[in-house]
Image (cartoon, rainbow, N blue to C red; front, side, top):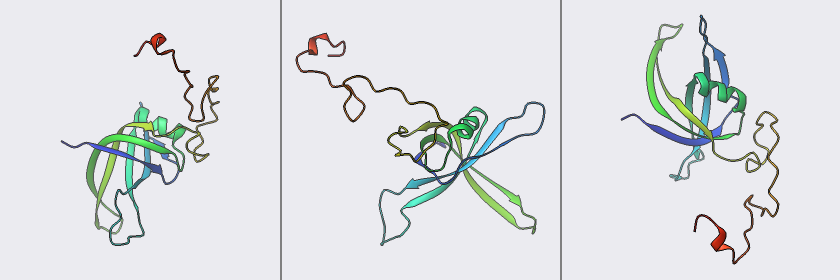
Length: 147
């Protein structure tokens, strides 16, 4: 089984290109900075920088919303490959092919880190607490459909 699930922030805006031909398709390349769970031997680096690629609709999503600092969760698989560079040397590659990409935090939680294309944010419901959830007064439990 080859399955990868990552959560991290884009190190720079996603780079999107379109394939040539009759039915051109979007291809997005990006690097995800994924925090390490544990720090070993006083390491300075506490994140891994993982090369990723996405195709078609997923790439178009990243073209629109993939800005530096935006936190995403992605699901995909690891793909290895190789090519011969201009010096005639064999170069080996490892990428995560992103099959599904979702936001990992809201625009407000990002603290201005991300620009989601200028879409207006939804108005807060009346009586909303600071966390965005409505305060429900005590004693109305019987009226809620999910007791």
